[in-house]
Image (cartoon, rainbow, N blue to C red; front, side, top):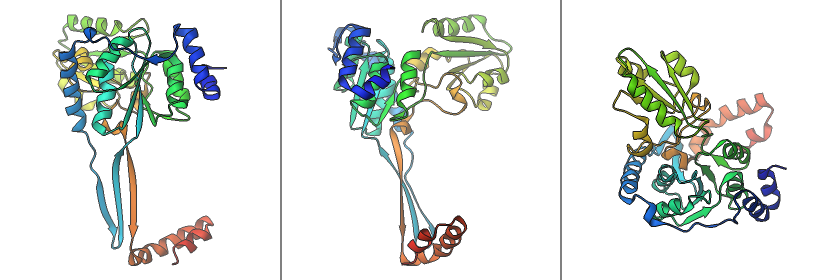
Length: 326
């Protein structure tokens, strides 16, 4: 039986057993180690992330589609979110938790592997977060889904964590599959090869499963749909508006991926594994959901009644037709 299935069936008992087996410790609140946190840098990043994501708030709309028929669409925050933070990655904590705060999420539950949990807990404390658990791996994903029953799980992880995240997505919403890191460098004419080497080395630092590629044209880059796309050389600016398949695009020799990872305020939790063909990275809307409200006056109902009756008859739904005759 998989870890996820076991936790789904047996709950907290299974979480404890897997945590002891894989990490050697039971799940527990993480103890902050403030001396480890570069507080000024952390709060500077958090401020930029907050301002960028607050600017993304979608607009509520109301439209009288016909006289007496009013439609409204409101954006409301989710009630709770689980944040998975890979070992010691306090920048990822900022990228996940600060947009959730900006959206108005009521409860934010952070999980992170026990090794490095003190650093993450200290960073969380600086951000005003109260729930940080020393619990990692697939068991953490399953705990968030089936024990804590959060409304949404966000955050990247290794291949095992990502597999568990996809497994629990049958029962709880997730942000996106964010697995091993990727960079594709599109080197057009005039590219400084030293910049290419710096970008590849920085991405390789994430681990042996990182994907680091250099391509010569946009078609190659688009086919890969990478997490990060770096445009270098004389054609960088001209190519930027044409990009469709990339999690984040970095334009020119002064725009390193590391700046986006740590300092610009743009979100660095991005789709990997080709998912950038269809989804984007974390944004404020990740933590919101739209609610549609419909109001009809008696005259409005009379106006839509013939359409309902005709379509209900075509689909064999007489009760639907009867429901608008009042």
